[in-house]
Length: 84
Image (cartoon, rainbow, N blue to C red; front, side, top):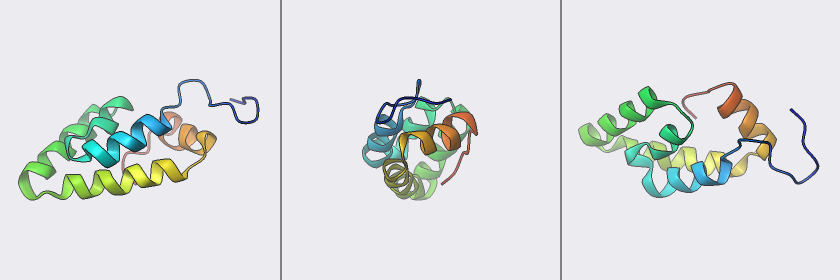
């Protein structure tokens, strides 16, 4: 899917997912936004069990924000890569 230079690909949620990952990562909100319900539930459970969900969310949020819109779209929205 191509888009004009500087234009976000249709359906890309990179910034929303990145910010939610950083701020609400332990609740898996960024995973639910991407339609990865199972992964979001795993992240919530890992946060309850040992607190790792928050750290994972923070790392993923930073990774999302460092990708270009096109990379994010291809990797996480089209390819449905679940972790990192």
